Length: 256
Image (cartoon, rainbow, N blue to C red; front, side, top):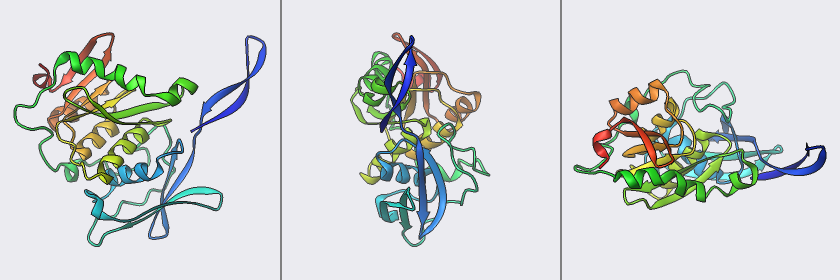
């Protein structure tokens, strides 16, 4: 996940750790359908999470083949979907580490809604919510070395932080988290919170809806569309969660 390059700091040349960014080609039945710019590591989770949003994949049995390899000096994940599972739309462009939807031609959430995002009477304590970014930060080992990656994780309402992944792309980190939950047959992740280290824009809410989580907790602020979508789909959305405080943009009734 990291590499080294020579830099000059205060007039002294020295090595510095950098986060790796390189392409991952996704191939469906042998045909390339997308190229993701990502940080290597957990590529199978990344591919599975990407499918959860981009296709009809909803359970482990929907994926017949999920195999990583190196071909033509490029990392690839070969995919085969079960009969009847809607395939993803081919993308004409490379998806950069900065944007998860820049090459999509349609922004459509309707097919992703599968169930209510939380159980009746579900809630999270305010003191638990504001502590989640710090717990996420404690597990950002690649960030400690490079300062150049985002992180995402799933948390229970009691503050237990489950799987955490890092990547140069915010949406990639989320896809890795969603993909791991998908492969573990834990979707929809009802009554869990998606915790992210950066801002919340459209694609993060899109992925949260696809994962069926109860809400999103973010260190930075959301966009206007992210707030509108979170309200529309009944998600808790907490942003600017730092220093013991938080802004509640949606689902404030779910915080006790």
